[in-house]
Length: 161
Image 1 (tube, rainbow, N blue to C red):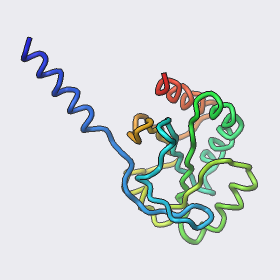
Image 2 (image 1 turned 180 degrees about the horizontal axis):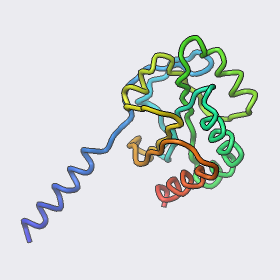
Image 3 (image 1 turned 120 degrees about the horizontal axis):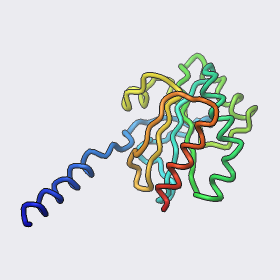
Image 4 (image 1 turned 135 degrees about the vertical axis):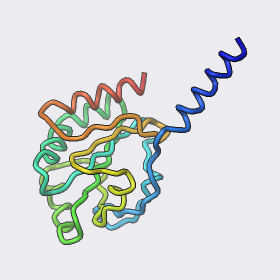
């Protein structure tokens, strides 16, 4: 029985130790304010991080689809969305107008040098992950098909149960 208990404790420690957390990368928001990514949080509630680019049509469709239901999601679960643009420096000026024209009510950050992208080994976009209330990355999704946003909110609902 003691060996079984020890094995169980080691399994819990191993799974906790392997939880991926947000890396410490310094980005700027669309208004020029510096933000350290390891401080992103939602007051103990889950949050979503969505990597996109202005030129990426699936990314824009996904963020548009989420925007349509975002108020409902926030009311139901308290979830917050951080959208991180991977546009390179020469295209960064296009991000804020895109966000404003589409009416996206997200916290938008800029990663023009790809620092966050490299830190998380992101190879393609759209790339979305969900963090639990402690900042642990608990779910990842690459690509977008119409309706895929429903899976995101289901994962958030599971986290707040």
